[in-house]
Amino acid sequence: MFGWKTKRHITRELEISPPAPEAHRNGIAIVACVKNEETYIEEWVRFHRAVGVRHFHIYNDGSTDATLEVLQDVLTPLELTVVPWTMRMRDRSTTEILNGQNIAFAHAILNYGGRYQRMAFIDVDEFLLPKHGQTLEQALQGAGEFPNISLPWHMFGHSGHKVRPPNPVSLSYVMRVSDPMRRDSDANNFKCIVDPVEVTGVSVHHFKTRTYGDITVNDAGQRFSGRDRKSSEFYSSQFLQLNHYYARSEQELHEKINRGWSFDGSSEKYKQKVLSSIRYIEDNAIEDRAMVDFVVKNDIALQGRQQR
Image (cartoon, rainbow, N blue to C red; front, side):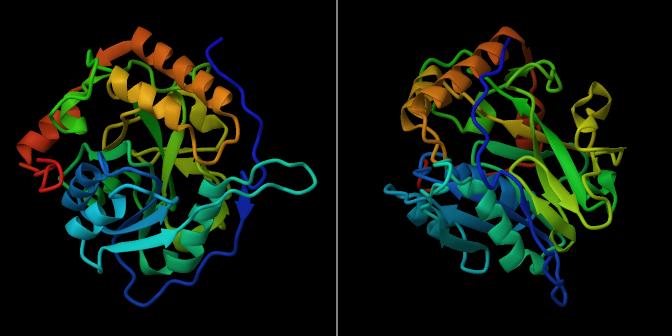
């Protein structure tokens, strides 16, 4: 048994009416919830801007470090929207915590979604790696015009690092879980890229659209139901791969556990989930240098003033 089961959050799944498309909508936006990410967010932003992300919608969960200063230093006002998002709410009748990340995603679609052809919903430790072409738009051609794309986690472990390495995250970690689709592990999940004007159902890891319901496609355009996407047949990273730098070094993993998860009230549950996941990754790791090769080939500058 690999998983650590946690209590479901209220608002884990939300139903919305899709926003109207705005005139001349175009490009790809990323939506992310962040808290105290000054150490990592510059590399993450620089990489995704280099692969064609038009705008970053950042939901700031009360950061007390220089996260916002880094963002404002790297991005122009035309590339960045920051939304204050300190959410600690419970349902009165059940005392269950509301899922603030999911509410943020719904808010982003409803308020900004009409501007873009695509919105991607990821975290700062997740990188969208084009495997076809040099940009996300080129890589997304594999999925065609389908409005709901699911990308399986490719979860990376320590790669032998005890403490934080001096080089960028995406160049330092090359050992990831061998089977991203193994269903009985905490290393099996998805993040999504959607056409926001088609979305009717919002969750952190899956979406629904008005024409196709819970039908989603992989990066190669193969259609599966939300439930069936967990089958091995769904797996593909031919065009686009989601790298999840889950653990980083052993030092950083301990820091991650001590910080806890912003939208979970139980630090012990979170700790056990993280430890279970990293044990599985480390026990089933293979080398994957696709990100390193891509960054080097395309001469992407990942470090700026804040990180040198």
